Length: 102
Image (cartoon, rainbow, N blue to C red):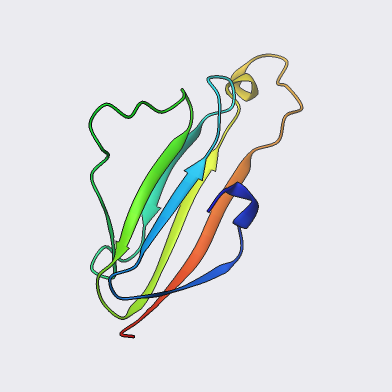
């Protein structure tokens, strides 16, 4: 799943995994990945030795229990805090994950 999937709903069954990749940069980083229901969808630890590009998010989630979780993140260009501010827009990412018992 990538930033292009923002606004969609994903269906998983318990035990399945979902990989989220949000590609950013130092100038336009993704930040603040949140999960509204960790008891439904658990973020797995990142494998050792896997480096992410600066400003990017890569996360793998496992469906633990039936229910609904929302994954969200935001990308705020660093130039927005400069004077004058740049014209690069903020971006947001949000998907709904429905998990069924299967």
